[in-house]
Image (tube, rainbow, N blue to C red):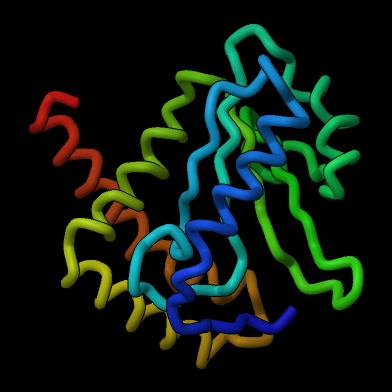
Length: 175
């Protein structure tokens, strides 16, 4: 899969809301909320045109029990996919095979949710950080366009530093 960076699409938030509605219908009371994360959730930020969502699942619900409902929505279930407390799923276009949505399912209260939201909110609030991230993403895509893992590795240290900064801001604000 080639790494493609597209200009910001103002339709992404509405698409994420629509997809969140599908999750609410499919999972009912097991679903607490759905967060739109990743670059498509940051206004004016160029991004891979793939929505990233965090479906937050109620405490006490076994994540793997959701697999049949998630499959019924057209998602591929990949299990933890490298992160033991997460369940990763993706949905692709039936006609083109192009990935449309990635879902990172976490149980309510998991610290990973806060980390993702802090990073998203930092990029939304700080135009300089957002611009630096976009520049980095374009650089990494130009060097690792045919290597998605290399693309992710290229961004990893910058993201880790930005996440740490975002979490420090949260701690200082007492939230």
